[in-house]
Length: 205
Image (cartoon, rainbow, N blue to C red; front, side, top):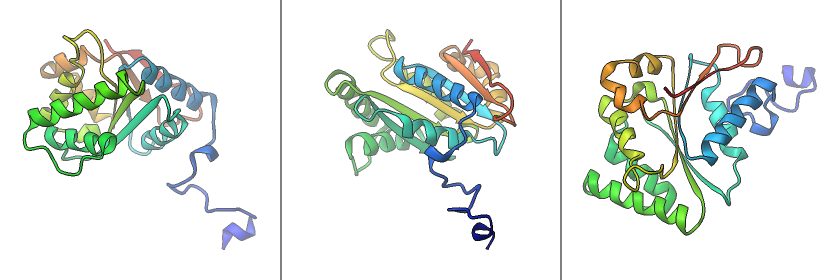
């Protein structure tokens, strides 16, 4: 096979390439630095880009770079995600909960209790990453607004990173989503050639 002909140790361009083997260009490093800032300061950011630009790979690299003593990351990718299922997924990852809560309000209450325990007792910052967000329903996107309502809206209980294709930008530009967009701290647009040109970075508003 061509691997042996070219003296390659593994098949190139595979999806499961180890994150430490990714080509770290200044552009990619800038994205990692920005995501780190979002994580440390419990911000809400939206990352968008066309299909195939490396959004999920970037998230995988970011998560692998985190200090496990300081951060707890949860990655969720489900095009049919519903609020109750979302809370259950977070609870499974952070608290090992196997049985889904009966109601959305119960699930949200339990999740907030776990987040509080992590931040105040374990001194860890929860990071929730929602991928394929361009496919989410209005109900689930609307729920992201309430996720950040913590201690009478005085602080964020977590870092929230929402990732999706370019359609997500168009969806969030609609007036019906204005209550959500007002809470976005940063928007990151990954260009089609992330390794050759700077990122398009803008504040949330």
